[in-house]
Image (cartoon, rainbow, N blue to C red; front, side, top):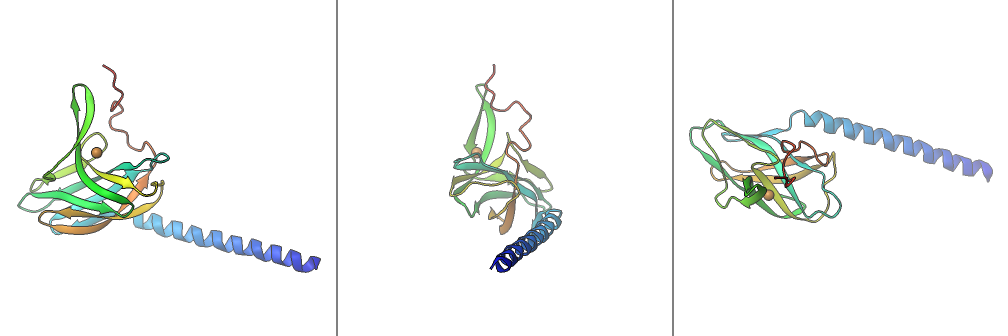
Length: 176
Ligand SMILES: [Cu+2]
């Protein structure tokens, strides 16, 4: 009986080790893919879509990336999705009466011909609204982006650390 019990314990440990090894392999694969985290859709190049880990219970999060238009005509980012968000909006943040405010860009965000537009904290961004689950650092969450001319593309948003890449360090302090 005692021998059987110790065998089961040992087998359990072996299984745990195998499981850890499998996890390590998955992590390695994810790291390799992260190096080529950009997408091309017609004339539009989408570099490194990312978001930030959400503090407990947060229902909204911003999404960021660099958009380059290699075409001869302007295009617009008009929408998209994140699988865990109920709504997706294109936003801009600007100073108004010494306060950082954001507003929805009803007509989307223009990407002029030959230009790169950066969506980053404190500036243009996309907004994930009605999050059904928190975003955790290291995750990659599926979603889409929709352009007026180029159409729709599936992307993965890489979730970076809470407070990752702050907006110049002064955003939202409210100091006058
Ligand atoms: Cu916003």
